[in-house]
Image (cartoon, rainbow, N blue to C red; front, side):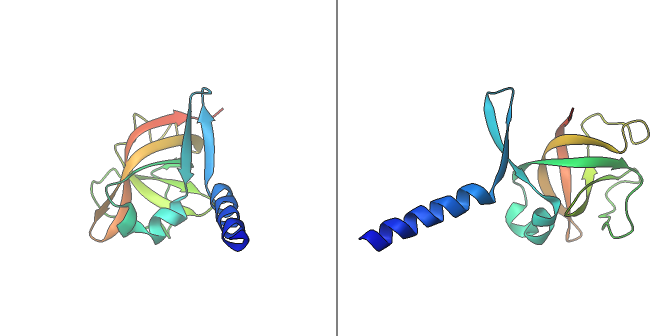
Amino acid sequence: MKTKKLAFLFTLLITSFSCASFKVNGEATFRLETIGNILKRCNSFENQKVTLRAKYMGWNCPAECKNPGITRSDSCIVDSTGCIYVRATGGLNPITDKRKEYIFKGIVKKFKNICYLEVVEADETK
């Protein structure tokens, strides 16, 4: 019985430290995903809502960033784990807002077997 309790506590401890999260206005806690995790597990994230912190790059996307080619005006976001293209940038301007960090809320989509983020909301971090 003691072994089961220890195993349960260990599992609880591991899972609570494996999820990055933050509070907004002291009201709600959101789990932050990473771009690398979304790209690695694209099928399980497809059509799921996600929240992530990333830098908006506008049209200056790194060469390794896979472009699904949805529109001619696709832009991208990057974090320390990778790069992903975005659609519907939440009102961001690809020229004046680039290189700023935002909290993005969106839905993971797939086109031509390439994952991208359909942005619902983007809030600049301070």
